[in-house]
Image (cartoon, rainbow, N blue to C red; front, side, top):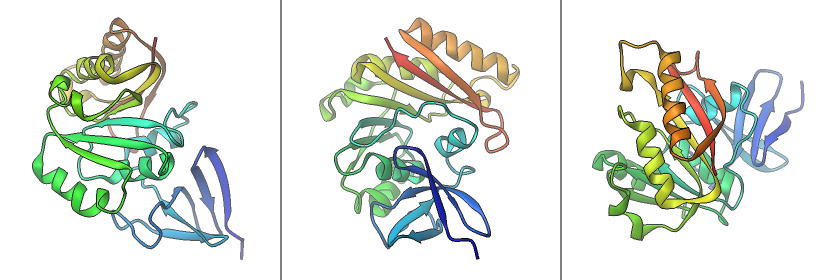
Length: 229
């Protein structure tokens, strides 16, 4: 039987291999407790959580060949569209207790689930109920951050990211925008929509370094990775 092998592909992000499978994993910040029923594995008495790329755009883009992951240990992250906490739990694993993530969502039900199932046990996550179109309404709740991660199903998603970046992102900080083409225009080709969103980001002072389509994990989605210059 093949002994489990861990390969670190980004800080605190690993590929796990054994004789049955190869998986994306993060080191569990709360050993013994999972978030969404994900399998866990012990390697040298350390627990790792499987990261399902079909339920996480961030997991998907890593497996699609992302070159630079700006979410690193000890960094501060604003997460727009945090929902019930699947992806943000892995962000929590990566940044550790020296980092912090502020997770914003406009849906009270999603935020209740995030509090009950995730942030109650992970003290490096702060939930915020709010509208990402109005960053001034929650500006007093968080400091400048290193990364803005956005997963918002809105027609003006790139504009939302630009506005939040101007409020909260440090110069030289990074944006990761999950572009949902069908939330913008169902009539246009996804590739044309991705390009139009890139143009909005760059007009707003962001330099896009990577644009990666997320098929087959997420149909008609792409991830833009941009630096705030």
